[in-house]
Amino acid sequence: MNPFPDKKYSVIYVDPPWTYKGRINHNGSKLTGSASDHYEVMSTEDLRSLDVKSISETNCCLFMWVSGPKLDEAVLLGQAWGFKYKTIAFVWDKVLPNVGFYTLSQCEICLVFTRGCIPKNRGTRNERQFLSKKRTKRHSEKPHDIRERINRMFPDTHHNRIELFSRHITPGWDVWGKDPILEPSDTSETSETSGTSETSETIEMPEISDALNFWISADLFK
Ligand SMILES: C[S@@+](CC[C@H](N)C(=O)[O-])C[C@H]1O[C@@H](n2cnc3c(N)ncnc32)[C@H](O)[C@@H]1O
Image 1 (cartoon, rainbow, N blue to C red):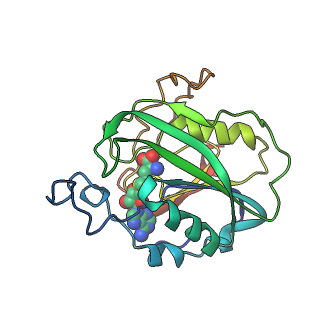
Image 2 (cartoon, rainbow, N blue to C red):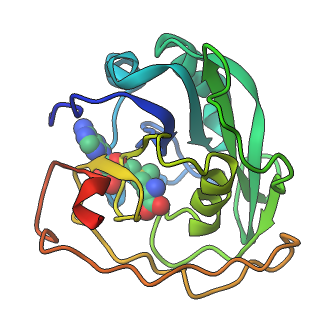
């Protein structure tokens, strides 16, 4: 596994490759279209063993994506990395539902944890929690609007930010992951019911699209 950067961050944004191993469909057939059909997944034990603490500032916010079935594990994971669970930072309505075991599943949530205090100086405190935006065809892709909301919450340049398990380059963010880097597929859209008009700047892609296991410093884009 690629080591983490030798650097500390006050904002860490993570979308773990949760495993749903052993799950079956509601009709008893093997679960198809699951994460492991699209990328490597990790056990909760392996996720817990990641030394996220080593890249966390004393005062640090951790934003973590989780689907409903993994909610309990997500809280424990954040705690294992040295953080305290605070609240649900974002709720993403994907507009199109998936068949679930109990109800049609349509939302994913992004939890926020802190280590120490909330990093200063803070920016906006009125970012909307809810975002309704149609999911893209790319499995697990999260809307770029959320990175933009986090940027506004922590706008100062000394707020080193990193995205773990990333598949995208985002200006101002270090990124760490193992999948080839993709161009964000949703940045030209505007969120539908977020209450704000969010558009993204064009992102220039570096020559690293074949890289497997990478961490890229935001300094490359200065
Ligand atoms: C849930 S996806 C991230 C999706 C991303 N947030 C997006 O919006 O496109 C998880 C990613 O973690 C990667 N991954 C799996 N195992 C990994 C490992 N051991 N080290 C680094 N990345 C890994 C997967 O290949 C996948 O790209």
